[in-house]
Image (cartoon, rainbow, N blue to C red; front, side, top):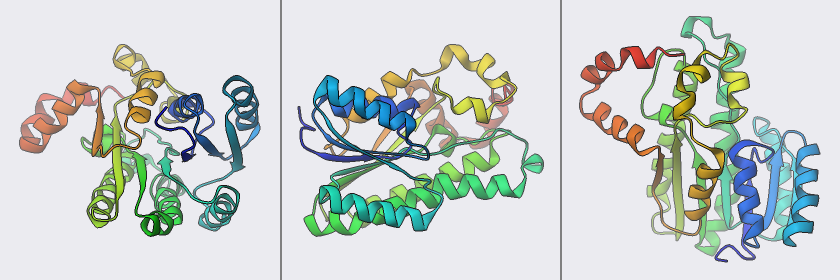
Length: 262
């Protein structure tokens, strides 16, 4: 019950690992704030979990790409619950296309959600965490932020940016009592691929390797309130990223067939 009464904010909470993390936190007695672009699913989750777990949950509509809206929503969150102990930046999306096929509007949207939105939400809670000298920022990045592959140039670029921001922030707040955790999962069996992989090619090729959202959610929640630097899933894919860092040219040649499964 380590999360009992902890104030936890989760973006992109209406489905996938966001919803799984939220339910695990509700079960442990956290004071939850759930954010997503539409609140219909969030309202149902709130009703179900307040009845089942006796949880206290607030929900807000938030498009993290709208930085003005981020500021307004987090001002209301601070009025309602006082402070934020843990922020999980989970909102994000990707689209698999060759670089020359990606419309600039899509490029801007991916960066607006995956990078600018994440930074905006983080900056909304950091002053309070610094003042209290406690808190945790958990950023959902991706193995794509460590190993770029064909047809994911823009998505990989956003996740490289998330990791760069996360690693820098961790050093900035090292003496402030704030933990900063990066989560780097491989492919997860969620609705993410309804947008990212509209033809279903990638899902078909990697389905047997896909992570279960329940498992990823459990790993992230287990790291809350702990000084965990990174969560890398699955282990064998993380080993690949280490080999890539040491021997990038050889790795790209050896993995060419696997990388082109999109």
